[in-house]
Amino acid sequence: MFRIMATAIRLFKNPSIISLLDHMGSGFFHALTLALLYRILPTNDIGHWVLYFSLVTVFEFIRYGMTTIPLVRFLAAEVSKKEKMAIMGSSWLVAIIYTLVIAVVISLIGLFIDPSNSYKLFFKWYPLYSVCVLPMHYCTARFQSQFRFISILFYRQLSILPLLSYVGFSTYHAIEINVTQVVLVHLFTVTFASVWAICFLSTGFSYLRSARKKIIKKIVGFGKFTSLSGMVNHALRNTDLLLIGLLMSSKELVVYSIPMKLIDIFEIMLAGLTAVAFPKMSACKDKHELARLFYFNVGVALVTLIPVLCICYWQADMFVALLAGNTYADDNQTTALFRVFLLYTGFLAVLRFSDVCIDSLNKPKYNFRKSYIMIGLNIIGDIIAIYIFDSLTGVAVVTFINILIGIYLSFLYLKRISDITFLGLIGFWVDFMKSHKQSIFS
Image (cartoon, rainbow, N blue to C red):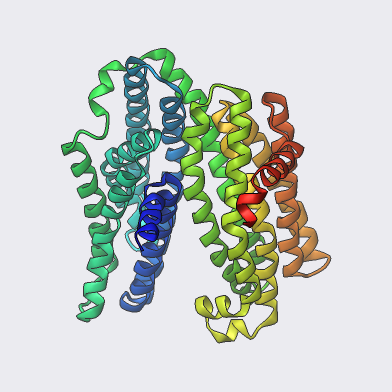
């Protein structure tokens, strides 16, 4: 009994486990909040909320690439306290200027948007949201570079659970609410988390006076590629749905979107694992040690994912039914698509860790090049699959092939700038299994 408890305690001290729980928990609470909103908000309001939240996510994703990824990369790589203060201050200055410019531009555009327009909510409230959430983002980025994933879990849930509580309370007591109230509560929750971070001096804002021109140029130079890569990757994920929506029927669009939503679970798991790997790789000075770290993390991700993927493949119809109901589970096409998606998810793990490794080597331009090659090939492949074969499975297969191309390009770039190769990955795990054979199979 005590051995089991000791093992459990060790597991929950592991940064990868904590990060995984954080991302899985955040994804689950967001999904639960949305499920409750579907039941309590009027149809028009739920549409406005989904549009508002989607646009907020896109703009935050771009800012994350411009400010947070460079911050984690350079903080993790530095050992000098003075340099870390300069990096923190310089990053804060970049973020403040970027946020104010975006907030002013969006506010000015909002003045010309009709009040009845679905986008009005975003143009009205996002400028304030972008300012209020900034301290919390910097707090979690700083903790990520220090491997304080328990603290990240606390702050992230602090910014999510109040909205879920409000929506859950309103649903339980059948209280009528509208989308503006939901947006204001959402704004309050992130503001509360940011104020908490400021009060406990966790944001690094006081280092603003340590900002240096040279470091600002370095952050902007790195951030422009990571933000562009983020935009292209986001577009890549939505290209399939966009082209299906344009060239096929709405029913086929819904059928294709169901397995994509299910695969998001694995994307969340990978985000949790790569969040830990990124600062570790960034701090690595030795190329051989970096290669070993990369190989080990990819292997651990695959060992974590493959059993879950096998269960999902075996019970694909059950998982489709859980998300979308028996109507779609009985449709063999939806289940078949989900199985194709599951086949490429293991390869997706290799792609995501190679992205992180390339960024940690301070070469984000390679990820950007790879992203726009992939989106170009994906568009051409999707059009062929839809126009010539009229096949949703063909669209999924194109995505699978595209991920393999992305992996090939990743290893091509990694070979140029490091000792990492695909054969090296295979060799590392063959040697690992040989050396640990007795302990694994005993």
